[in-house]
Amino acid sequence: MNEPQYANPQVLRNTMLQLNVEALSAEMVRMRCEVILQQNIWLRQQQHLQQHNQLLLLTLMQAVSQNASTQTKLQQLTLDSQCDALTKTLNRNIMLDRISQAISMSKRQQRRFALLFIDLDRFKPVNDQYGHAAGDAVILQVCERLTAAVRDSDALSRHGGDEFLLLLNDISDNEAATLFANKLVQVLAQPYQIEGRSVLLSASIGIAIYPDHCNSAKALISYADAAMYRAKQQGGSRAC
Image (cartoon, rainbow, N blue to C red; front, side, top):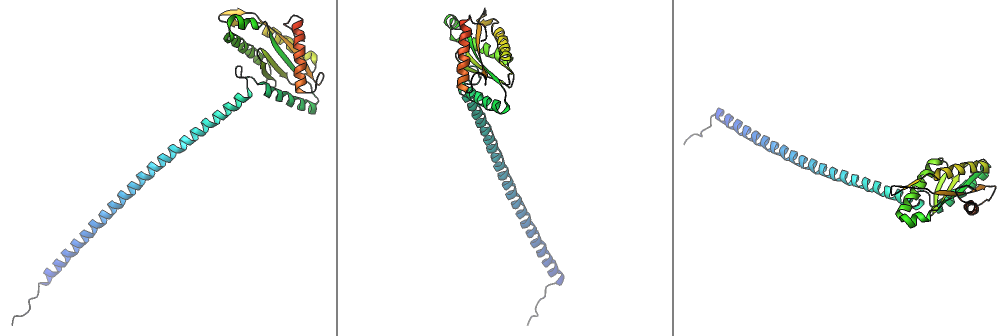
């Protein structure tokens, strides 16, 4: 009977060592692949997050831009609702409110203010001869001169056509208002440029003083309007 053959111990050790090395190498390869896979997943997540953030930022910027545009439009609509379309001065309703506010303030502070009703003399022939576009150009020139002459605390409005209302806050008396109105008459008597030509016009101005003449906004306008017509009847180019 043959005796069992035993492998060489050194060979066995070498074989086991080789197997362990191969197993370890395989595990290292697996772990490396796992790391690479996780890195790829992380990179894809980062790219997706970056794209998402860029989209979110773009959406936010668009929202901010649209909101700013909306605010601008609302401000413009508010301004348009308060101003005359041609001259951008206060319209009639807002001016009426300003006069009422001036009355309330003057009552509390026991002060006077003046309301001037300004109407151009001989304005209709300008429209008839040169057209309405030229007439609008003259109205704008009048508005520029009036705006340059008044204080920040005063209020100017286009009442209609070639008529303007000017609210002069904190006027001491009728004499001070008349002095200022006469200066405006001189300013408005300077030549106007129409299609390269110089055209001479003038203005008649009616004066109403609160509380001397009236104590309501509409009554003050009517009083100043009547005073303006008296100035026209006296030849125009004057304050009354």
